[in-house]
Image (tube, rainbow, N blue to C red):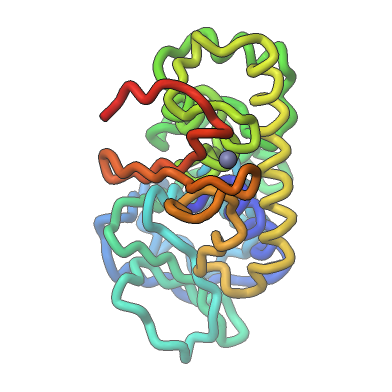
Length: 285
Ligand SMILES: [Zn+2]
């Protein structure tokens, strides 16, 4: 699942490589992922110029001339691929944009859980805040999205927002309504860095734990963004996760204490943590 660091670097890549690109054609190969809200995307998008890419949480917005945008919510399995049009079209390809110079921008989605929305947006030149009102109304889950994890939320804000939530801290961190951009992998990394059990109830966190958590949310994701920036290159469809410290590393030694990393798999979600460095009762079985 792409999370804030992945999408941040993909955004930067698209801004650098699609600058002034004009869409020559748009093909929808798997219509279930596409919601043409402003107009039929295949007929309306060609001829428009790419303006920029923006990100908020786990949404990526590609803005085009004439006040149109593609809002991409990749969910669990969506990815973008930028490649020569001669590159074999993978079976999981859902949308293909010909972006000039013999290049394609493709949206891939193995399980077709993600969505691509074609919406009417603010006029070109507005900063759009990755959306504007139209997007808020039309794109599900966009309304009520909490502040982006990399946007510099203050400790006071962080504490005040957390008060509205209940339950285990890992679950709350991954809910976009609290802070947006954190998913399953990076929530494990943040909690490991903060030394907090993923199963600790968020109401039970002590003030000093909250402070550490607030710091680590930003720090872990900033460091990951930095790493991805140097590693992702033009293969934006490939997930780079091998540098993570605990997520999906069950049975391997903990980088802090050397003990074994514990890994649980519940509801198709992996949770990896160190029992020694992140103490707490495991209530769930
Ligand atoms: Zn440890």
